[in-house]
Length: 152
Image (cartoon, rainbow, N blue to C red; front, side, top):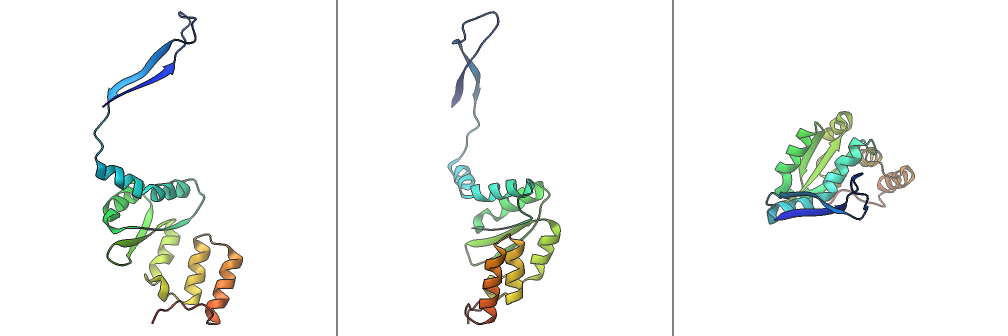
């Protein structure tokens, strides 16, 4: 496939501002359907990396397809970003990444989110940047057995 993008080109030698000049003409590398699907499936993951690197968030939790575990780990390692991955069934993983101190706290928590204590649930929610008042309401609802985390 040849890429031939056209941009307006102005040269002092050619005073006609409407002259068109190709920007470049190169053969693009072949992108497989599998790579395109992976890129589409991991678009949110890549955006979360952008947000972390810009300082928008200190800790990110994203749920991804387990088949992408290797490329996810490779990207986080290449970016030198601390992370921990928890399996949540056959086909899904929870990926936590961000500041090393935050990831270290996540490592102390139960990997099954529905088995967290009320306090752990509260801490995790605050670390992920959830609304503080809503996290306080959630904490109180869990403590008063209005919300049940443990599935038994």
